[in-house]
Image (cartoon, rainbow, N blue to C red; front, side, top):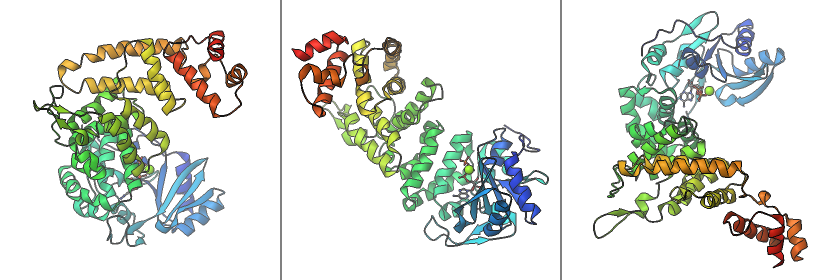
Length: 463
Ligand code: ATP
Ligand code: MG
């Protein structure tokens, strides 16, 4: 790919121009910078506009507030305020350079400067160090446009020094490579591997944010194949999977490569739209294989109970990374159920829906579809002769659609009787007992032992 970027393909939005005009009208200099410029040059205008300026934050605050914009002090220690213009937040940061980093994460001091070139030099990658001004055009001292054209993530300046300053950049490099579908420039790649152990010093929630960013690009498969050392530093449990021979006639790949292939295959089966929980589950579904591995007398490898052991491991990893419960719980449930055998029968499909409903109320339908995609992806990532299971999974998906379309019961609210009916029929008082009875009834209906019919259910209650 070789492209020439004469100018940004998209107009800077009016809310960004207004901020730049206001600051420059007061005698300062201001540019759009970072993600918006990068994405606009790639014909993909992005969400927010960041502005960098020669004005100190106190001046920027006064100028923008005097124009009637709401201004928030979102990071004044680093010279950042956020102005809300036309309802859009615009981050405005004073030109700055960073002092020494002694702990791989926080610069010991932030120094404000007057030259934008110095500000661009402290940014992480060449593609993120391009400034744009509606009248003055592009300012690109590190040939970020060249790297956008070549499809390369390259550190600004000496890569090793840059990663030693701030090890989080190691994961940022992987995230941008995944998001943009770029390669990492060889010198930057070497430094990345050499400096990945600096991640030890980074707060785990910041690592979690970057990892979640990587997962959400849908390219974790690529990352596992190309950046295993880096990911192994971020999640040590992944390092244990790297090179772990399965000693199994069903498996052609070690645990990590199998996992990478599953991550890629879920994207294919989900049309590139896999949910974050499915993507995380693809990454972690076999995380317990190294700890559950046994070999029988014939030397064959087994991983008995790895989904059951893997589910709490998955939860522990994701909680450590401070990921939210609404992501952790469905992911954990997918990991636990990834080997659960779903038969091509309505009963088995309903039972699977019920398992998800119990673990993640209200999300059973989409999670059951996600489970089938995970199982498909798992099947095509072993040896060729087990890939045929996908055909059976296709039948189960069709059946799942019919079960849902027919309104078959798998939620408490689907039952033809209510808590009030239970109390009337049995005479028990309000309390947890009512819920227990309803759950039992639901289980009988899901198992096909009772029809979901009001009279039949009431009769069984009185029996
Ligand atoms: P996104 O679309 O993910 O927000 P972005 O490029 O805007 O992409 P941000 O994390 O919002 O990324 O950061 C804004 C800009 O700040 C980056 O483009 C980069 O120039 C700079 N930057 C952010 N984090 C770092 C860092 N750790 N080291 C150096 N520069 C950074
Ligand atoms: Mg941004």
